[in-house]
Image (cartoon, rainbow, N blue to C red):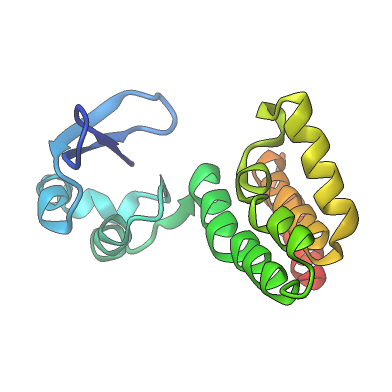
Length: 176
């Protein structure tokens, strides 16, 4: 279950696909509860048989799935979990660290300007950005710890089994 932008601007649509067959089973305009409810009404009692729903972190999706698919586990997609971790954790630590460096303007500016290299996928960094990231992480232990936790969080989606994911989650959570 995913939302996507229609053209440019703030018009959205929602697509729902079968996770096993990858076949699109429904598309509708909008992304609100009202907009996606027709799908769930058409689904009817079959919703009770759904075991899991993969989605982004859209509250409307979450609420409708809980209401109409009470036995389904909700699985948030990697992109949205990592983006949320970046916005709410890495960025918060970066701002806090910059504020602690008020006495050292040069270091403060370095940390303040590190936002995009900290949030960008490491595989997409150019040589200069990679070097900048390495330097920031070397000089700031709190940013290093937070960055490593974010990288480890991504590994949860690469687990081969539920048991492996639970074990990795436990290790990750203990580090947090």
